[in-house]
Length: 112
Image (cartoon, rainbow, N blue to C red; front, top):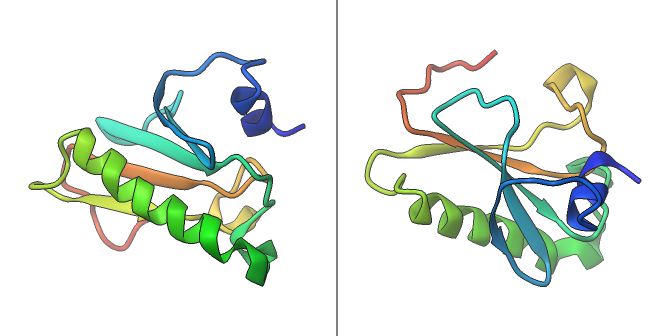
């Protein structure tokens, strides 16, 4: 089981900000912005490049819920960044698809 699967199963505690039957959103333990939340599908998909056509609904749901969570956390007016890393060179550290919701301060571009 990945770290995120253990959080979903409540084997590891997390500061959960949103949950439904398909996704779980929780605060990052090592935030890179004042607001840094991870939203993960409950279905284990290792990374976006491993997603299959049958994952279309959960991927759409993940992104729509990321927007809802960002708005709930007060980021609608100031803006926020959604990040999905794919592979080690992109900074992926847990092999379970997840989207970072980052905001609460100006974010530089390009990242990295």
